[in-house]
Amino acid sequence: EAQVTQNPRYLITVTGKKLTVTCSQNMNHEYMSWYRQDPGLGLRQIYYSMNVEVTDKGDVPEGYKVSRKEKRNFPLILESPSPNQTSLYFCASSFFNDGYYEQYFGPGTRLTVT
Amino acid sequence: GQQVMQIPQYQHVQEGEDFTTYCNSSTTLSNIQWYKQRPGGHPVFLIQLVKSGEVKKQKRLTFQFGEAKKNSSLHITATQTTDVGTYFCAGHADYKLSFGAGTTVTVRA
Image 1 (tube, helix red, strand yellow):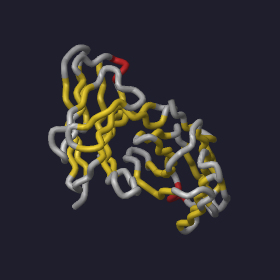
Image 2 (tube, each protein chain N blue to C red):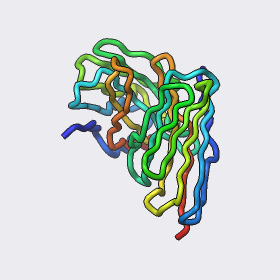
Image 3 (cartoon, rainbow over the protein chains, first blue to last red):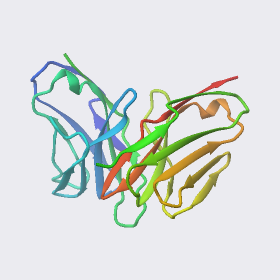
Image 4 (cartoon, rainbow over the protein chains, first blue to last red):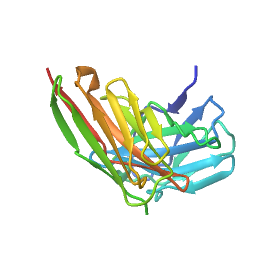
């Protein structure tokens, strides 16, 4: 089954404690992306990657890191989480090179930073 | 940077009525996509529009892309309870995808 998986689905942590949210896709997609969703703000892109070892900042990259060492995985790293990073996070993937960019979203990770 | 504005933020619709949600970009887009997110779920792709002036239909949903490729609309006819959710437009330019804030639709039976 074609899918994007994220782990964990729910996470409560404390300020400053490093965490990683994993994202994996099984569709051989080139393009992967992380979004955060906050009420009234829609989905805001944090980072995106057009292929292995190619990443770039989205609209709200501050406080986040990513890596793309393998095509299927795109982890999101919060080195020192703060309460303003409490949000619902989505990973998404798509093909990139054929002009058709349907994004497949993971189920989401709800993060609370206290 | 690129900004995508979407209105209205909320749409309360009587079952059977029509409604439209609008999307405007500050920059010219290479394409625009529409997604639907059910309460508690993740966004699900509905459609992509690429050409200037393009119109596409999916049953009761009609999608349009403006001539200048800076605006788009989604029109739903004869709204049903299954249409409940939040509809997002997403503009694609320079490898980035910028989402509007979404239109949250509730339906009165």
